[in-house]
Amino acid sequence: MQHAHPKALSTGLQEKETRQRNHPHSDIESPDHRGFFIKQIMTIKIDPQKIRVVAFDCDGVMFDTEETNRAYYNTILEQFGLPSMTEAQFRYVHMATVGEALVHLFDGKVEMTEVRAATAAFDYASLIPHMKIEPNLITVLKALSPHCKRAIATNRANTMATVLAFYELDDLFELVVTSQDVENAKPAPDQLLKIMAHFDVSAEEILYIGDASTDQHAAQAAGVPFVAFDNPDLKADGYIQSLAEISTFLGL
Image (cartoon, rainbow, N blue to C red; front, top):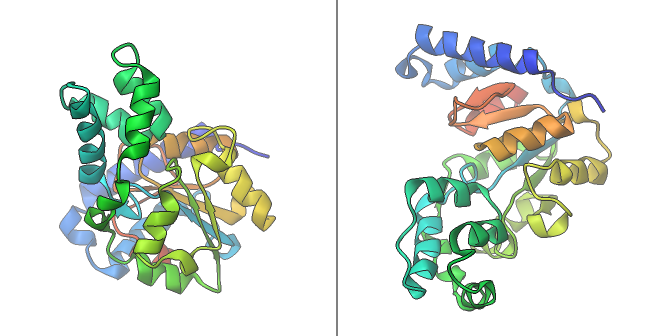
């Protein structure tokens, strides 16, 4: 399997920065302009006619979960008399698995068995209604079928099924791969490789949309085209600010 070429990714980022300077945000608001914007970058590597699977990260792409995740970890910290997360701590835990986040926040300060017991007792479902679903998500998911299979590759663990059920998204994905379904979570490529194997597709036939460095590295390691969502600092094959741009690019 061929891995993404660093030069191609760098070129994509440079072209993206050039277009941002030439076309301020207000100039790419219409669907037609957004479609042109993404095509000019993504045709470096991606053939939209070949895409058979579109995979999404959850937090930061499908949902804005910053405040719910912040509330979750700060509540657990408070239970053990520890201060709320710093911004640096939050940025780490927002990309990490729950296990990695807990070790990052508590290791050496509290017995981890006690921390895990506290998280097991926590009613995370109470936070799910406060997650902010991304505009256009449902419309895009419906538009993708039957042209493309729809998948999730997320470092969430046992909460993903509850989230999908609450927002009635269960029937809009053919496959969901969480950190519990693979040996190694992102930034390892395991989740994307599992999706490719499940649908029997090659790297050039899947498009992965993420917002974090863990998504970028997972895609690069799997050789999968990567689209950065609302994060121009990542090295990606394409950059979007709205999920609706995916439909435009694929011609749906």
